[in-house]
Amino acid sequence: MDWVPPKAARRLLYQPLVVLIGACALVVAVPVLLLTALVDLFLRRPFPTTRLAAVGLVHVIFEALGIISLFGLWLISAFRGGVRSPRSQELHHRFVRWWLTKLIGITGASIGIVVEIEDRRPPRSGPVLVFSRHAGPWDSFLLAHALVHDYRRHPRLVMKEAMQWFPTIDIVGNRLPNRFIRPRGTGAAAFIPQIEELAHGLGDHDALVIFPEGGNFTQRRRLAAIERLVREGHQEHAEEARHLANLIAPRPGGVMAAMRGAPDADVVFVAHTGLEPLASLPELWRRVPLRHPLLGRYWRMPASDVPSGEQAKVDWLFAWWERIDTWIDEHGTPTGARSRSP
Image 1 (tube, helix red, strand yellow):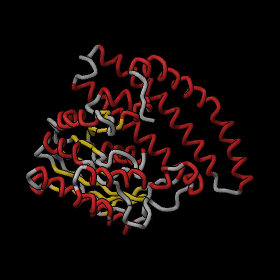
Image 2 (tube, helix red, strand yellow):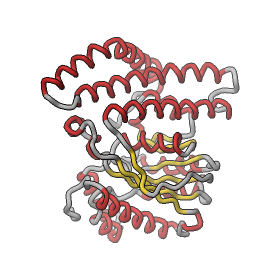
Image 3 (spheres, one colour):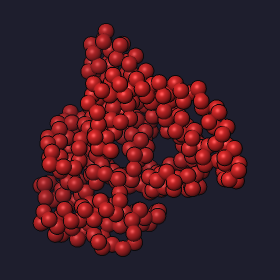
Image 4 (cartoon, helix red, strand yellow):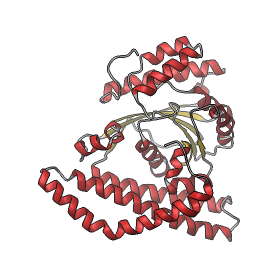
């Protein structure tokens, strides 16, 4: 769903309704879980319905808890320089770390999410631009959790406007330096200057996160991206995109804007596999609890290794996308068909 209600409607109508639903979820949690457990016993399954019901209840309750907590932070900030003051911004970053850590921890324990990072390197300071593949909303949560919990970073995320349907993300995302964009349509180019502005002033513990594909992987989007490259005259990159079985051809606009805004930042490319079952609720129900870990791989390049010149950067981005696609082939089940042509 791309349409999002106006901010006033979200604050005054939608978010109070979510708090009410969260309170109801807390009341009915025990009977709902008992009922789903009976269903799973009848089906002789390892409690997938119960696990998913628990995850749904936890998410609703945590959304309500997030709204209440952020309202409290707003009240505190009103007497301490406003929500844009350094002290308030730090309190909001701490809230994000706590909220994500608890939510991901409970969710992971419920459905069996275990993340393994290949060749994990120790954290080191310095501003970074993070360019990640996109395989569903779960990778956004898990990547943000890794940044705030494992690496103690303050992430600046470029997210789709539709993410504002999640009230906690909506509120905290608009208070901290992030951008909600509409990646498709005639007005998409208007967000490029905003991404460049967002990249300005990255500190040693900041990280700007972009998903260059602009949306979750589907075969339809993969083929549409190839057609767009052909239509715009980028034949060489279209041919490269035809060889991507697991990824959508990246949209260079936001990536180039981020690198213009933070030319001295290191670049981190993120690959992962194993999230594919989580993109579909029926498939997730069949696989819960997950038997295999989610695999991830980070590559960090110093700013000095980034090519100079915009066209060279675009070619470099496409070359990295081919490398990530190969890594996915070698480490997991591809999301796409094995055919590498449209």
